[in-house]
Length: 555
Image: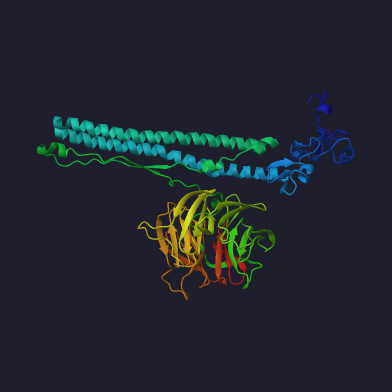
């Protein structure tokens, strides 16, 4: 540094020239030290906004009141506002602190960035890396078939040259078609990877930026990138070479089977961000143990029914009343939400973004809770929603019945119906007809849909396409009472956990329906609702006594 200009270049307090001041006034655009800040604020000729220097840039001038600072964010209107706006145009709306809103948005952006870097982009790179292998298989198969055809052609000499050429032409045509599709998919995936990397770079730039307008303008593309490309599966043609009979040359030339290219919409999956915290093939502990017991307001008069993990520290619960409660592991109430109809919620779930979803049987709706506001996302006409779960892709799986007659499961993307699961391949109903239609639902790691059918006394598992995989009706080992499944959940190992309320135990199956073990020595009393956290701790809602138990069952 030039000694003639050192004093000018050093950042100092605007009032006393103390070097490296810790505070900054957004309105006056000056730096002040902790000693002078009081004097600066006492200057009433203008408004002041003083905060830590590192948080400079968060102040926004109100568009309607140019002399005011936007200190609040209107959740309902989605705009920053000043205190005067809050008392007039936005009176009665839900507000959040502007700094908290920006921090929340940046946390969401950071979450997007981490998902892009750790899961989505690597998955696309993994997928595109398999295409050269498919090309090599294609070339190898082409070479084998060409060799077989040439050998057969030499045996038949000139009489079959014309037919041989037709076969090769047909084979080349299929090869060209397959290669064209592979090249097209490779180009599309490569383009998508380029877009993902642009998003990553943009997010990193935004996360280091204090430009409020840019932060507010950010729109996540992660949902778009989660829609992985369809898998191309080819069944290569085969050449049949029967013995030569000159009297039937044309019949004995042989033929190529048609090229079969199947587009498997569900061929690729992305691991959820929380899955990395639990290694595969974890061993069970010999005797499961209770980690925590959470006492709730529920009891023998007002029953506890459902539990759903918001995080490893906080859980949502609900029972036979109109309230849904967020508790920490000490049982302290963090938040409570009342259903819009003041009727009990039938089912609850937590989405990937951390929002609470609940079904209301009474008014045929599925609702999502954002902060303290409730939005209806699905409104049914002839059917009524029962239980619900949120999938790894962000879809909702909703169990519904038509007044205790029939049951079906419908997949929704937002409010759009995508899939109906109701019948077996032979046309018979997948679920019990009549009864209480009490079916709990959970998506497994492999995207199987696992459902406990209380009336049928069975657990039904279908794949993502809705095709039945297996039915579990209890182990060969007899239990004291009949197996009547209630709550169901899955863990990071792909194992399925089922609440057996009447026998006071939990059944654990592998993802193919094989019984592995019970959880039965934790003094369980009428286990009903189940969920697991990211570390595979099991939370059990006990219907009879209104208690939630956190249980460790893995080493």
